Image 1 (cartoon, rainbow, N blue to C red):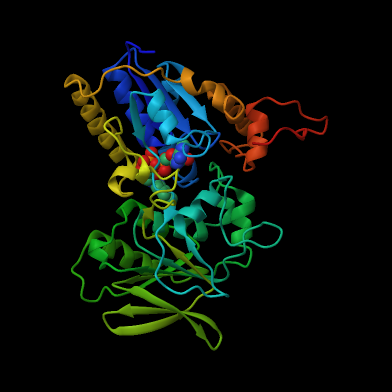
Image 2 (image 1 turned 135 degrees about the vertical axis):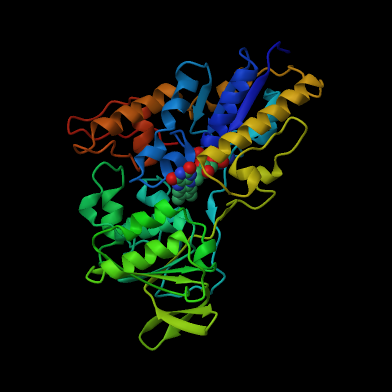
Length: 426
Ligand SMILES: Cc1cc2nc3c(=O)[nH]c(=O)nc-3n(C[C@H](O)[C@H](O)[C@H](O)COP(=O)(O)OP(=O)(O)OC[C@H]3O[C@@H](n4cnc5c(N)ncnc54)[C@H](O)[C@@H]3O)c2cc1C
């Protein structure tokens, strides 16, 4: 069976997948474009990465929604490529494949595990606080996250590290307007975070955070700010802001100490508990800690050769995009640029007739995923449910249980008490 229009499969509905769909739709009005997504909900890290108290950055989803509502792009949610369909299934059914699977795993700090001091990836922590259904944080037997304790070390000085510091430092009653998972946030902070040490390898002038993100922390009324490692640094905007905050914040109840030019090297057993050993220009210092959170970038969660690993997906029809392609660097806007370039490459391949429309498209795989699929209407039901059930002033209360998400997506009957009836789980 051959076709006259391209059949395009995009794998992943994060910003890079959605931007790729936008550019490919502009290039071919008649192409059949399907975005496959492992979760029952779209938008990747816009929903589960961007901090819940930065709703403005999440508003990009409104333009992505237009793809499904007006541009004829199909959302095929709850379909994991490599599990529900193999890459080979997709390669046979589609002319063009655009892996946009992002990088799902935090890069780890190369220190030995410590039984009394969890080392948690910032991405995992923020996904949990964003209500991700597959939360992977240290937990108690009841499933609630284990509290971080009073002394938290954050390793890294990019924007993700700043998100973590802010989410742990900001008073709990200041999250109005956010869609943070209040239960998880309260559980993580149950023992009361009293001190946050932030370790960045770079000098302050080369720190990767945006000044606005840094200033947001410095401006918190409840924090007392201090710093080290800046004595030899030339003046810069961040140092000026930090010095001003240091001078005015002496009475804050929660202490945040920024260590610049500081590299954690080991997690040791000290006489009073875990000690983080940190190398600086002045030698090695030790810091008592209860938890360590690493914000050191991301990598693919699956080893090459795993059926779900995009590293294994190759061929003349395959065009990776976004974080998957660039090693996990850049903002949402950077993914737009990446998607534009990739769409340009695809158009060039079509022009040179390296690609010709010949594949059957979505119809060839539809039966195989019929029981699994959450389509765009299903997502809209989840969206409406989340918006209807949140507290006043909040944008949504995210469903965090996959089975419940699927029940709502499929509009399964609910019992009189409002709970979902048992249903076929996927
Ligand atoms: C904590 C955090 C905060 C951030 N905050 C900001 C911010 O405020 N502003 C900003 O501009 N940028 C921010 N970013 C960066 C931004 O989120 C990324 O640039 C962007 O999300 C990367 O897009 P992507 O589409 O490549 O990957 P992702 O957003 O990760 O999307 C990948 C999608 O692919 C799906 N997928 C994976 N494997 C499969 C499979 N086998 N089958 C089907 N689907 C699959 C995933 O479920 C996911 O939905 C933040 C990032 C993080 C981690």
